[in-house]
Image (cartoon, rainbow, N blue to C red; front, side, top):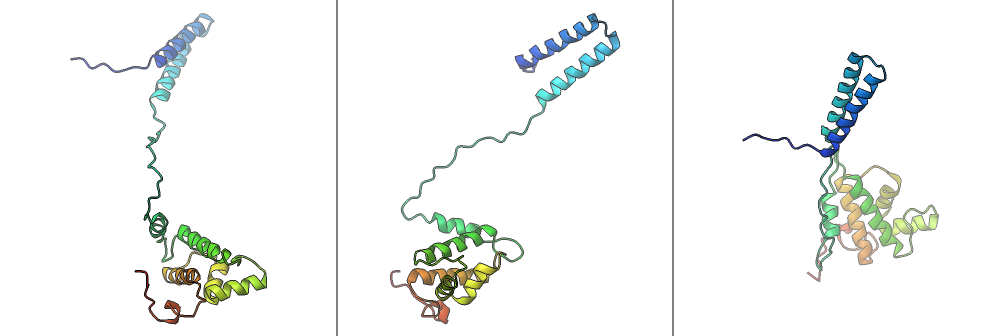
Length: 179
């Protein structure tokens, strides 16, 4: 059984066109060695250009983006994005937690990134002075320990408690009554 190499009809058409061009060059007066060399070089270039794969990635069907009841996609995304390099959290987690804090404060009418002294004092009072300073002054991603303190301060915002009253910030364990 003889194996047959499949060929593309388009490449055969282009190769035939190159051979006709070579014959036309010879007919117009180009000497035979140069005509053959030019035609062969162009044929080689044609074959190589058709055989070299550009490396196309296959397109996969996207998974449906459904947020089922009880799904914790945001929490899962945040968890997977936490660890970065050099003992710090990733930039994605850093930005996400800062955005959560800004949203929680905005719900109370406080702008986390404001330069207004009244807004700065209000944000520092709600988050805690150290957490507010870390969130607004240091552009580097925090360590995991610092990020935990940020998340704790944001949890206190959601509970409606100022930092320092009850809960973990005062050193006591807080139990959930709805669990």
